[in-house]
Length: 311
Image (cartoon, rainbow, N blue to C red; front, side, top):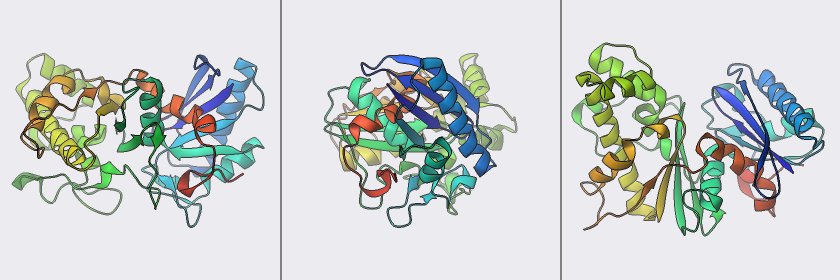
């Protein structure tokens, strides 16, 4: 038995995962997003509660988190939950629990889960995308997560929107300090902001999707802009990695139209005569990231870079 924790911007989810891959217990709590110490304590309390429910006290704990641990300083950086940046988050949670933990970027956990026994099982190169409160990605090659020299492999959300049109320049400001990052367009808040900017209506992403399905022309235009931007962003990845599969995750991955309309747009942007890259729904849905976190213990057999466990 092992514990997986997905530390998101709005919720913290934890599971107890049996050795055969069955989820034995699952719990969620809201993320106290502006309070670093409260997040540490919330994760520790959630782990203890799951252990009590599943009867697996002292189980190994893996954590998926936004951002990445610096290989140089051991401090978290690049998290869109800003209060976590600059802290040795893995060591703090380990201290709160009284045992070692292993930590990886949440997008890498998602990609690892879907490449292992999810929608892209058996694929050689998998690009796993998170479209949620933030926007990120992870890369898996032959079953192994690609971390990179600086621990930032897959930081797709902070590349600029490719081939921007006039009204997309310079783009919305991003928490990273730049403007026009893919995250500012493709995250849930980015989608809502774009709709309000163009229509004047303040709507949630869910309301925009429902409005388009009901025939609202403003909502439909917003989703078409989103689809084109997502296609442009993925086209660059296909040009560089030429992955065998792209898997979408996060709250916006539940929008069914992405899986037919985005592939139709790829050929305009990808540098190839044909584009057959499948864009897949996650097999494990919202559980994929937390499952990948739980599998960090058997998956990681040595410590390196920003994914090492500081035990």
